[in-house]
Image (tube, rainbow, N blue to C red; front, side, top):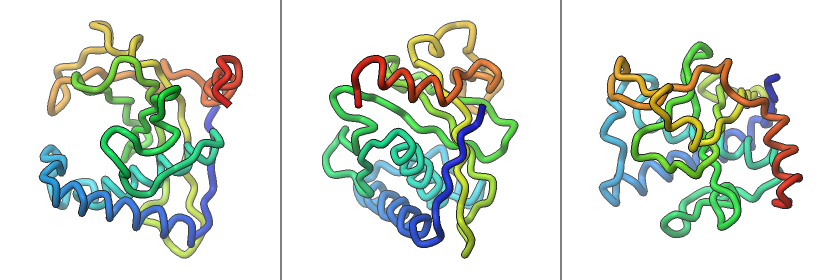
Length: 176
């Protein structure tokens, strides 16, 4: 079951601008993602903008804090504090899979999102939380895919756990 988080236009605009600031900071620090080709899928800036919007929506849904700009290395928000390590992945097409790269953390929980209407307009923006998958289960030979532009673990959407299970899981392990 998909969870839909609706952001009002002002909220979406603010969060998207935070994504742009992240892109600027990464460029300044020399850590911009070289795998993103300018002009492809909205280019590098849109990659960061979509990512920030998706992170914010997941944080809001899980009732966790969200920090617009990286405050210190490795600490973005409650999504990645000492108790949680959630990685929010955003896809461009509803048919895409959850991609976990070889260098991504094995102990993280990966949350897949999709934003149907991008870029944000003057109407509310909906972020769809499609599901989640533990890195320890996803980083196995069964999901290794060498047909991608760069080899990675590819988890089909049908294998994802329901977003509602993630919400219940947080309560069960005492993270709220």
